[in-house]
Length: 336
Image (cartoon, rainbow, N blue to C red; front, side, top):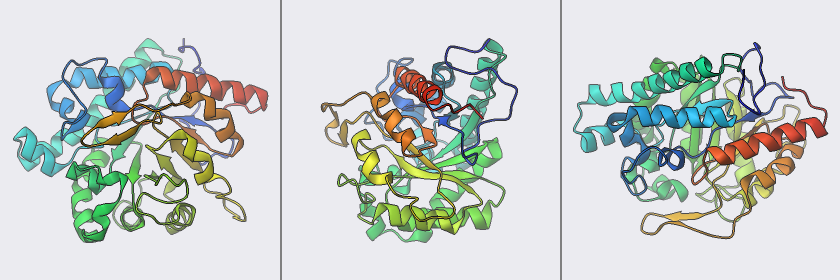
């Protein structure tokens, strides 16, 4: 039987492109991983990606936690992973570093297999490859400002991204999560890269945004940027949205984004807990309403995918799943 809150079905995997479907994402990987490891994660230049090498069973267990909580998909532990970082900080060759990124997909597949053995009637979850921004490799918080966009050529970013995307696709992900992208230049490059180099691969694109609730982290108008990126490649982008921002900002960012559009953009949101972060201080606690308290409002606005990012764990995903199911019942929306 399926765990509480998860429908039993033999239908195909959730699809963002189905207009009535709602997809529950997983949460902050490092946050949940901390339940399985004793070593510090925050502040590590490799962040949770180090545990692909040092504790793969903990990575698998973390994925399973989210699946048991009701997530329809799991995102690989590769946000901070790159060939260069693994070579420098794990003393690997480039070939070994590439293989370790591929291994992240293998671990996710193992988690799915173990989950389906435990709950054989559950839908088979999707495996999504995390493609974090170039700024994540700089370990200076610039994925939350986009500062590197002023000095880093787009071709440099592309050369950095290609081998990690190659490894994820070769590993067998179902789609990619191009996430926490702070600037239009990097986003457009990645969307065009999908079209030119990976025409059979689908992805969602999620931006890092500014505190004004209107702009990308780098300062461009968010809705204009999101529409432009989606229109570059609507056949491969299954959704566009926002991640790793305060949940209170989501409404102002996405409200009205599809007004006047003949082809609506499917919207995905997976904010953090509302805490702020900087490299020196780490996460700073603020007064934060539970993430699940926003779910009904976001669904009313037409959001199709909801999950969590930093400082959200399996319990948060379980609460999101409950709110999604409650909203479905109240609005007479059946699961696709």
